[in-house]
Image 1 (cartoon, rainbow, N blue to C red):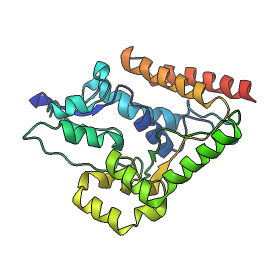
Image 2 (image 1 turned 30 degrees about the horizontal axis):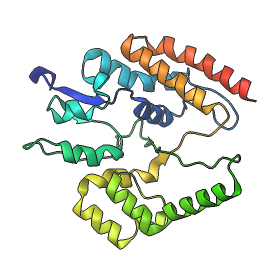
Image 3 (image 1 turned 90 degrees about the horizontal axis):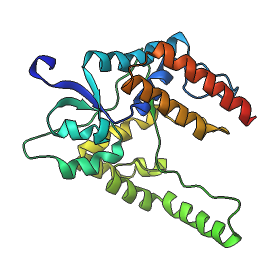
Image 4 (image 1 turned 90 degrees about the vertical axis):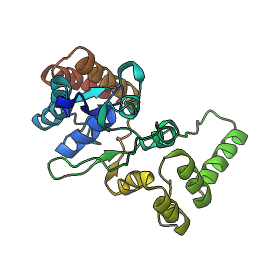
Length: 241
């Protein structure tokens, strides 16, 4: 591919989701486990981080940069693969130039293990809300968890259904059969994971994104970036206790 001027794979501006999954497959984690142990700078995490970092250095991978999403380069025929969220599928289908045909697949395994991060736009309820507001919020959450509604949401957005009964629903299975690009996300649910929730998670995630930016834009090595991130994470966890 490189000889033909085509980069192997494009990531979004940040490859945090892919790296989060790689590190999890290595047996480490970017975020502390319930026992508050931070192991970002472990040999396993370093090796997993080098998978993407090395590809960026030798030119077999590229990030989206100012494009924001790697799909721009992919649909322009500049990369063979694109790794991104299933939520972008509907936009990609609408933007695909004539003559380009593409399919989707679950992310590959690493060291015999599979793991892919599951995320989305969270819906939360604040205790400071009035009783009426909380009742309305609870009703809205209940509405979204209804099988019919979550199937409609999944089909229109590229996200996955929120309840297991929707996955096995005959109508949804027929939708997947007619729309094969939606299958990869649904097939990934069995090995999907979510980052652990803890006080200070938002600060920890921002620190993670900054470390990835340093490795991407400034070519900082994982050997320097991860120990620095480890120190930050430990401080964040300690201050939140």
